[in-house]
Length: 326
Image 1: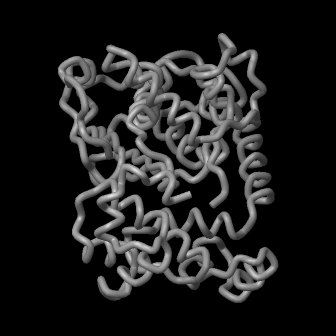
Image 2: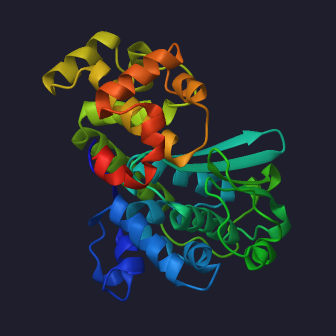
């Protein structure tokens, strides 16, 4: 699997030796694994339960490069969040973020897709905090937030976080998610618009186009499969349609890169399945179905072939996951 990355001055501003974003090249990339790990170390060392969340809330838009520039001149919150979710791939790879409106609720969901990156408590708090910070630009009141979910389990006193957010978050969920009243999507920017909305949107589109051009088709397939894992059956025809390609064109492109679809699917099942084995208490049969196997026997045989150990033995050796999975 290709190394996941995060771009923009944000990584260097939060973790690097530079004191502010001005000292870091706008397109510099940092390993997402290193970024998340260092955020986690700083979170663990801090007695401030709001450290990661507040870092996200106060993060300058300039620190997320061309994406932040495109968000800044949006006149309504809805416009800003749609730009944010559409342009997120230029900031961070192997991640999924979406905005969905269901009735009178709006949901912004976020997941790191790379199963090798764990834990990611601080990263989740930072990213949802950033989303909340964008909401603040549009004068969204605290009570507009209706729900807040995290993948991770609570690991410290939650009273300060609950007081700051105005509600207690829910933990151990399938994704990190912030839910608020859909009415606030029409909230206007609370200060005068600064910047050219048309020009910055064009720059973002160019960045997304260039990213697609530079990203191998096999890597795009890898990310597409990981984004769909646990959400139903995955097949080559579906992935090709999602990528805007015919199935024949996809096969040809993958053949040129020496990465057949079945090999990519197998790798995704291997890494994602291992993460489920050692980081959850789900039943083996449930994991088999989530990975798209027809039954538990097929799942067990595959993992025994890959690791030389049964799923039960792999779960026991979860503390050694880094040496096993890489």
